[in-house]
Image (tube, rainbow, N blue to C red; front, side, top):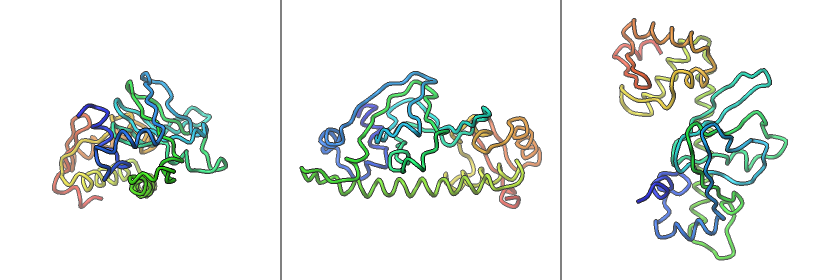
Length: 228
């Protein structure tokens, strides 16, 4: 299995799609592959391209940038992840022009026509019903992810935000030791806190014996849950 097939196999949109249907499906969805250099903008929220992307290789970020220059990391994208579906199906009035998708590393993206995903074609392709159900599941999952992030941001202090986020990651991974998808600056951007304040809060949690960490790997100790 090559990198493209591996990324598509891991994409939630294609769950339940048989490998033999892949080529027919990509043709039906008017797929186009594009490469991007590190730092390049992949998609603006206001583009209204009516296409969604699947990251095939590299790493990308969804960013929110204010007129003041302040930047918030909304999400990190890894190979196999779908993006742009919210931009494609939202009304023009609901578009958030501050949002964009940027290549963090050199990326390859497979673009798919959104309308062809959510409507059955004249050929009556058997996989379309599954695609529509999968797209609904993707939208629902991302809504839940957004709600969880709002839960972190609603905490009053940097310490409380870190406790909330790390507790969630432990629950998602099902283990006390895990790797988060962010470096220090990205985690600060994601939690909307100053990096220096966040680093100080992490060191205090470590000194209290609640956590240990090395780069993006964290381990939560036995007393951690008593402080969440």
